[in-house]
Image 1: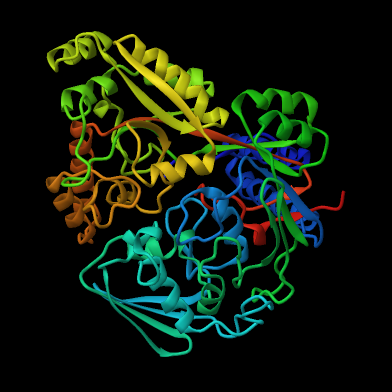
Image 2: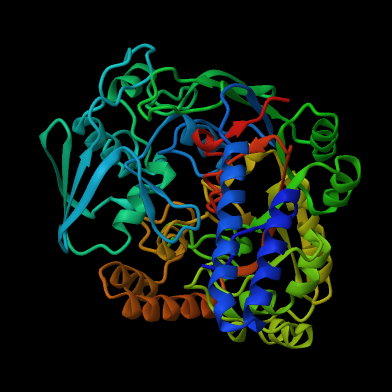
Length: 556
């Protein structure tokens, strides 16, 4: 994993400490031998003293409501049924999972699980903390969480309850788990049908929140409720206005949370978000790249954090569902799909759409991950060759086709650039901008000719493979009927040898690129502004944007 972020501001005292240590160590390198030990000890002593001061100065404080913004309402609050980050922004604070992806996404942290043990290649044993209670509201009324709740929650994610196609992450567990045993209130034993490399990382996904069956039974789903074991309790979800959480006074992690609550204002207009932050009405918010300089000028004390996004912006053709929804001309010809990819100047697109702040996409897995393809695998920009390929495929004059996306600036801007680029090779994109929920409703009906989309922020490399290009029964985000790909994707799941699995995942990506259902455009560098009194722990995964139990604010 590459470096996750940069911080633009640090304390003056810390800089003085570092300078002093550097000067001391410089002296050590040229001092007589008898002086080196005392000088290095002095440097360590200074560092320890300064670190102690910093620790004392940064002792977490209790109180305050952290105010932020969302650019759109979450479609719903049901983690098993949703895919957009607005949902998990809420549910990582109202619910817990067994495990949680660590800040750098290099592994996982224990959460509800007190321990986890891999017994053999197909058996995993979890022990959960005793005395963990659901929120003290109906219908659970603060009852203790048991192994049966874990069993139910994972089975629900896997599609065992309700309509399977509604469970957008069913590919995690459907057909993978032989049995879930609960020998006592605090022990869960998963027995798998075969070795399954992504298993623990999927268990750590924020979409695998532990929920109570009686809540689902009462409401039918969790679209408008978020009742869990987390550090905050949902107070209000007023669509078009705000979402507010309040502190869970009975949270099972002693001393947490520090905040009294979290509030998100629903603010689709980025200029309004910026104004609210500068005016002091928000404590933290996401920024567009072109807003960074304004914040530096108008709110010079602000901290601006930047880190690589884990979402990939993509241009995709209509899904291919063999026997039900065949590919239609002109996209049924591979040469046409390849010509589309060849006609896009990715560096120029990134520059015009996001100021050049990001990384060009190559294959399905985003560049921030170790399993991503290398720049040498990139589709070369060649509009003249693209024109020839279109002509050879029977489209010497190009064609017109509809492109859908949602109507927020970070999507409409690249859509306009793509329209101009494809126009150069004779392809006329008819742009249709939809409301956020309308777009996803249509996308999940697989009802479009082309779309500008953002792929998931996965927790395992295969999460950019199986839900898009895997066997049709398990591909929830997209459909592509290539049995050869299905076989390869299924095979990589069962390889526990890391090196061998990486090699096959590379071959899968190259095969997908040859088919060209998608053009992988770019990932963004994300910018987050916060007031200097806000302290937090960053998590790289875009679906863990605010892990509220780590947040605290100085009195201000």
